[in-house]
Length: 406
Image (cartoon, rainbow, N blue to C red; front, side):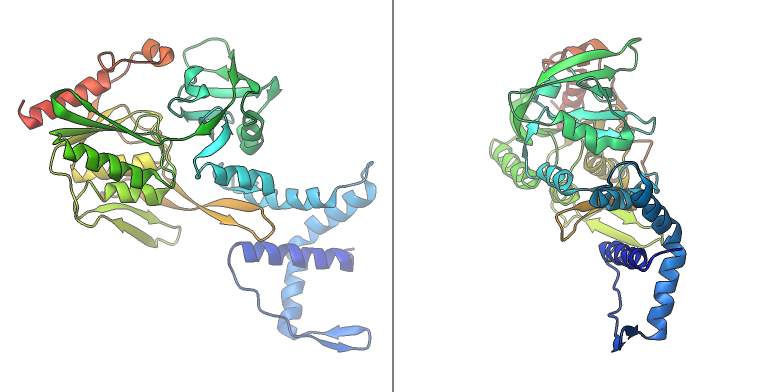
């Protein structure tokens, strides 16, 4: 038998969940008669339906609260109920976050946080998987590479199912240490890496001049300042009369789609950049406005190029605006909506898939470059690769020289 209290809790939970999804709940008109409340028949049927749908949840909640051998933290239990809603989707990118988790998540788009500078994703094999280390951070200097599986943090097992918990354990105050146990393809045994955390201040765009007056722009991820920084660096290179451009997206784990679109706007001419499609088949298109650089360019990509990086790479490849060089990208083609809630919690929900201008969905497959160039594994693990050793960069320079005619 479901108590009146639990029926009300169930109604409240459903209203909270419903408001999270931005649906509208009709205001309830009531009339008090003595110790009874009269409501319209439509509202009565609405709450009967709630009780039918959530009777098992409410009964179990009531049973646990009465019979568990220790006092129950009701707030934590209700938090767990909401987490269960997202877990039932079996989508590692759709998650509910408590206050601290949501705050930590939002910090990443601002560009400064304490940690080791590694972007991670829940792997389909159940392991916490490195998408890529961010350039010039403790994670990169420690030798972590795309595809590494983190199985323990400070000796405690971690799994993809609890990615947020793993991330919280890895992050921390600058100067403190963390030990990761890692599994890597090609190595028989797991190994441990001890890393000292730093304050991660992300400078996402760097540029310089290469031989033959060819410009080089490295984009490490897409945060709130990336597009403006890219335009600034591009304009500085233009003033130096560069003859071609290398855009390096290797180990760029993605970030804000809006920033990626602004950068594509500088490169493609008047084109479709990307479109998204939800389960109902509704499409939303992002288009560039006609600007285009007047010199040839190449994009360098690899397995660590993911999400927004793949959107830019896919647009360039499909429109034949530039040449992709490197290895097949990560393959994340799902779009998440991030929504804060009034109590400081929040969630990510996968709402659509994205497609390249030619209608290619790369999720789980990645984008194959126009020219495939592998990097020797020993160089990747060693790090600090020189321009002369960088086979992908050298191929890019070769392609540009031919196009320039030098």
